[in-house]
Length: 258
Image (tube, rainbow, N blue to C red; front, side, top):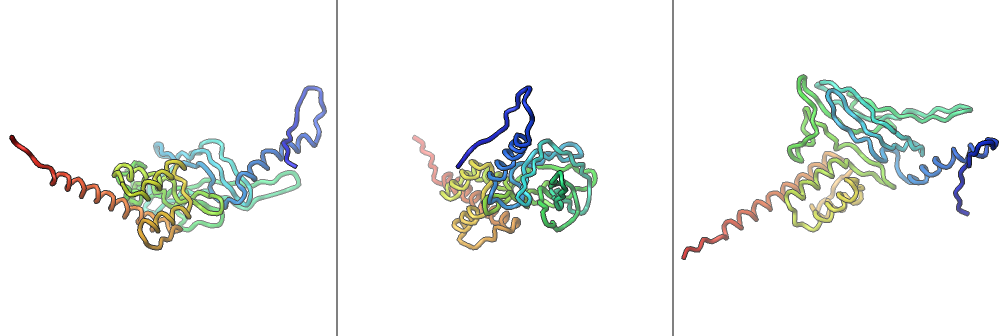
């Protein structure tokens, strides 16, 4: 039997335990059911904006051990210059529980820790020189992994049903350049449409299929740096093909004088 059940509060009526239980269980069951089968990790949001001296992390959803955690307002994290690589991450420590309350928390923090622990997820990484400013405006697809003064988002992952999606910002930028270079390859066009429709969230299985068919070689889609290198090689090929076609068109032009 399927049903929907919620309490009706009216003036003069007695507040019953059953009414409070219904109010508690409806949103929890809906959230858990919506993301059943999804892996632990970021479900949505947590976009990172840059302001003067601080990172602005936008609202988002996180799944941890079957619990759905909600960040419902913007969080500000100060950043600073460092020769060490800094990682902005979400960390969720072990849940606590007593007779009255279950609590699963998560924090967003900037750290120079090189390896992520259990129930930790990377948002961005960067190195910032003293006196420089941190930027997200990229000069090319290769610029995503520039070592200094540049936000590197390629190691971010999004949890999907039974799999993960790698770095939506990287996928969106890849699609932007495919469009700019006007790729005529059917696989590029179809993959770019998928990126546009999903706001950059492309599962590992679809990514693997595209790269394998496009490059005719095995690809480790769990290695973000390797994926970036292969996507960049495709963009270089597309750009070079466009240049060669433009040169051929100019060579074939003839000037006719009467």
